[in-house]
Length: 445
Ligand SMILES: Nc1ncnc2c1ncn2[C@@H]1O[C@H](COP(=O)(O)OP(=O)(O)OP(=O)(O)O)[C@@H](O)[C@H]1O
Ligand SMILES: [Mg+2]
Image 1 (cartoon, protein in one colour):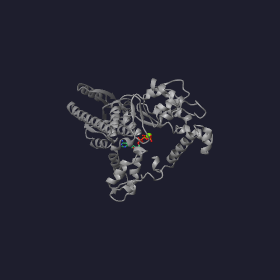
Image 2 (tube, rainbow, N blue to C red):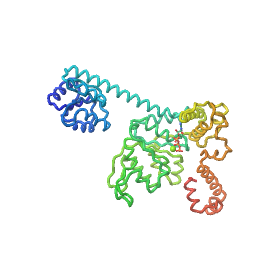
Image 3 (cartoon, rainbow, N blue to C red):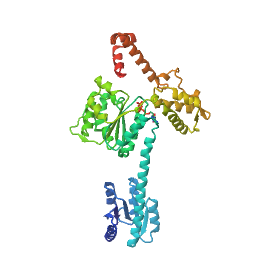
Image 4 (cartoon, rainbow, N blue to C red):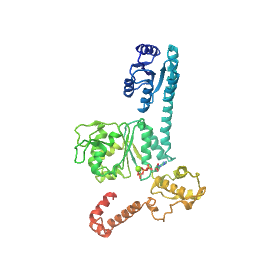
């Protein structure tokens, strides 16, 4: 353990250093509390022994400064005989203990040992809490499904490595949930988790968002900008909708993955970066590769670990536990009593095909929890009758999702009828050619 000693008296510093070294502690002594603060900011000390009365920054101001700068050190104050009041003041300011001068070697050692024990307990607690949180994140993923459990087992194993992970699966199957669990389960869990939706940022801005730029790199680059990769340093960057990443950026991402370096837009130098990449997509990347929209080399680089989350309809056995979980979650959130789900309602939940997967189930349970006044959830309170508008699209009441589904259907039909003649299809659909081409591309038809 490394102990910092702060005292303006040379003889005191010397004596403490000798005693502590004899006990096997490493020490660093400071005559000036201001310098000691700087040293604490620069390197780690296990705890601090600090005199109260000193010229310049005294012990009290030292404690206040630590508080202000968020330096949560264990500090033992050394007060002159009779300065009891000040010692108590110090404890109020967050000091851990105090010892009155003059003291014998045994006394100081005893106090230090006590502090050491406390430090050990503090760390042990932090470690246990950390471990509990790790498990907790995977425990958030409710499933009994074999395929899901296999995926969880696999990603748990790689959590501590920097290996990229690609998560595929339909919308609402839990891709982001798994991505976050991977992050929190590993040592990177203490670092940042940065999520980027590659489909939501205009392609021309995406490069500088991801990699940053230097001042003057382009017209609007008025100052240097840190990219999201940099922000995710020592943590995880979650590239959602990776299938939407433009080709040029796919090249750049591949290089980043291979070399562990990024280059800001307009920069001549590269910078080392240590961010774990977790990517997700609803698209079938193999199809995208065939269509020339996704690079095969990037795909293999990302897909070191194959994780395809099964749709909810293929793991119906998970539905009751998930439904109960969400019922409980929203009961707590709305301050309502947790409600039982009647068997007939549960049957309905299990029977329904859930095109919007777990997200749709969550939305349905949230609505049911709002609507039900009584103590149980009945079949009637579930907004999932399939002949209801919107139900077949899995988007709940989303007009956008319903419109998309309808457009997809009509365009597919028109293309089939016209033998893929887009001009004729556009006429049938009463769409401009440009709009049709855009939609075909957008929907990946
Ligand atoms: N197995 C599960 N256990 C508990 N909650 C789950 C599970 N799977 C998904 N959820 C919850 O369902 C919702 C949707 O999950 P998530 O956002 O991870 O899906 P997604 O695959 O990223 O969807 P999209 O492709 O539409 O972005 C979230 O609120 C998530 O917490
Ligand atoms: Mg998502």
